[in-house]
Amino acid sequence: MKEILDDLDRWRTQGKRVAIARVIDVDGSGPRLPGAAMAVSEDSEVAGSVSGGCVEGAVVTEGLEAISSGDRTVVTFGYSDDDAFAVGLTCGGTIHLYVEPLDWWSLYDEVRRLQLDNTPFALATVIEGPNTGAKLLVRHDETVEPVGSLGDPDLDRVVALDARFGLAAGTTAVRHYGEHGDSCGSTVSVFIESFVPPPRMLIFGAVDFTAALARVAKVLGYHVTVCDARPVFATRKRFPMADAVVAEWPHRLLQEVGPTLGPRDAVCVLTHDAKFDVPAIVTALGTDVGYLGAMGSRRTHADRVRRLKEEGVDDAAIARVLAPIGLDLGARTPEETAVSICAEIIAARAGRTGAVGPLRDGHGPIHA
Image (cartoon, rainbow, N blue to C red):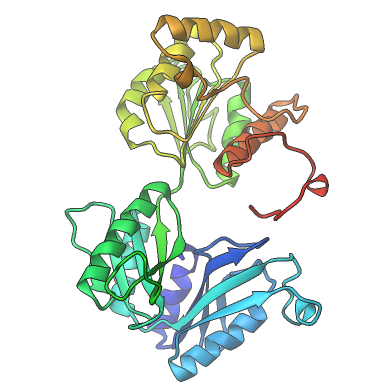
């Protein structure tokens, strides 16, 4: 939603009525993930996207109807011979949208503030059942009371717990409950949307491959930190694309930020120098970072494994280290290697850790 805040603020200042549509679920292949948002003003001005252009025209119609009627509804667009070209969803999947008038401006103000501050939070919305449209804003910090209500205190309590669990993983999904929050019920459907800061990538080693990896990682939305113990190499001039450049021993930086790393984050050790990478890897293994890769030849990694074992690292922990780093794409240049590394991160995050081949030769959804 962050990308449409400026337009929402402008329309609000102009006194225009607004509807907002959000992707709540995708079956099969879909161009946008749950949480993608699109807003429509009363004069048909559009901000954001829910399908990369496939069904936006139809969503405008749904949004204008929501503005006119005040109704909140779940709408579905799928592929079939009859409607493929009518709405343009030709990727083979089905997307489910929740469309509502944006008449909850007081809560929106808090949503806007937290997003601009990059403060993690979840927004739970009843999309079907009693109190459709009711909202509960949940902070990750359990000492901060949720804002709003879904209409039942027990439901609020259970949803708040699920929302905090989803925040830890950065997931957005629809969950079903009984009217009082019992997990075996399905009376109430709640869309729990996680708003979390960008995932982080820590790149250790100010080497030739680092600048290329930082550039590709930025395209993927990572907050990138480049770290090297040698101040002459770890400079802003060499890595202007990075969000932060730190002249420090990698393991010392990890000791500082490691407790905040989670499953969405990545550590890429490009130093392939034992005095740097072994302490960094040992420290990284003590965190919850989702991806840990290390550059170097197979011979280099074999020596690295020996050194790690000397430091007391067991086989299970060593198995977390993806080395040699990257997917086998035949990469040779720094730029190709950066694509290879990021491809491995994407595959690992999606659970595609086996052989990777052309989409043409695969089966199942292409948007996992």
